[in-house]
Image (cartoon, rainbow, N blue to C red):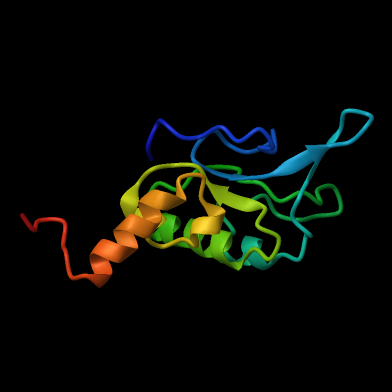
Length: 127
């Protein structure tokens, strides 16, 4: 996974360090709560990457970052199914950006450019 990524000011503090993250807000007493609605849909897409919702945890956050191609697909699926936009991607990997809705990315222009180039028939090795 890439080492340089956007650090969103509303990044939920329990997230594992890395470009995939969830947003949250701080209450008056200083406690944080996730912006996700705890519907379990994102957790079902990426069960090994997102914290399980339990009686002791009602917050959605990444417990670890994806490493394999399959895990990246799962993380992207979780971001794409989140109905509140609370799951986000702060990285710059064009392959990942192309899989995500630009509204869920902190660098959406790269994703749009990648999709346009793919639509026009350009491939990575084209000169």
